[in-house]
Picture 1: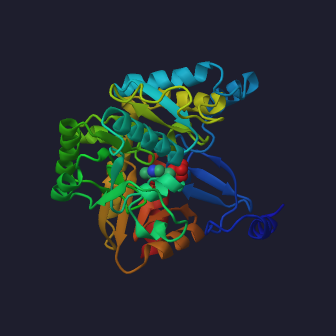
Picture 2: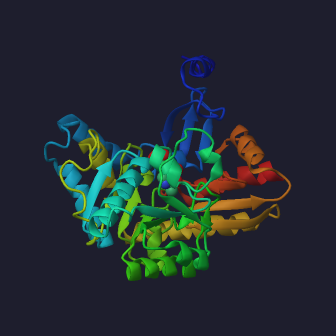
Length: 389
Ligand code: PLP
């Protein structure tokens, strides 16, 4: 099929939940994507923060293909080596105790929400089931996670929503203290609100939330679906804040492109879920876990240092452009505020000129593959410069 035929069939046969950009992706290598018409693009999106090692990284392909030739799936009724390897790497590097694997960010958060409710209701009483999330947050698209998401835009249809979620304005310590009453079992937050506009929470607020949780035996859940797995220059972004969460959820970057997500549990929470409480057929699939193991091996201290340096360089170069008024975020998760041209326009025009970009609310969002080279960063930046001129 050529590009026109693919787009036509997509229009006819795929439910219209996505406003797609005008690119039929056919192949990719590193930070370069080749479209069906042969055109090459610089990728500043990493498949919305998923392709942490870029397109078709050689060692990642080798690790995934080797597993694919051995065993593709067996279900969670049996043991497999890649799943325990991924869990071991994640727990060793975070000091958390145990992992649960699902297939996406929303599923990761579902596991955290269920764990928090079981913890609260079994330890303290049936009424201890409330979860505080933040206004402007994003936690997924399932019924529980859209309810957890603190944006009215996501609460338009699909009623009734779940009971037991309360929303606190980001960075409002006083309100958080007021909301954290005896019915609350968990506080859940992204330390950088990704879909909400790449907005990092204030350090005082995050530390205070951790303190409230410690004092009141409330669980602290950090959603690292977008910020995790090296994206901000640390394995997990909560490390920038000097806190230790009770549950950390992850997805996107860990699989390097394969669908995998999950949650990590600390000492208070690692034995809350018991046989029969939770599960998923595909979660921790050996092929996805083989990809995750390769990603985790690659993201060592040197790699993280490079992410931090490349992120700082990207931010510095963006701020040199007179049309860019502000750059938020950390490492290679950045949001640029522009003057004179709407973010959506910039992204559309950049694509027409060979650069893949994202928006986050009214900002241009940049999530390049973590392995992007300086030369590829410069190639993308020069396209952006032309587009916003
Ligand atoms: N949590 C955060 C912070 C996210 O950014 C996302 C997706 O963008 C999700 C959860 C949901 O992840 P998924 O789309 O894999 O279900």
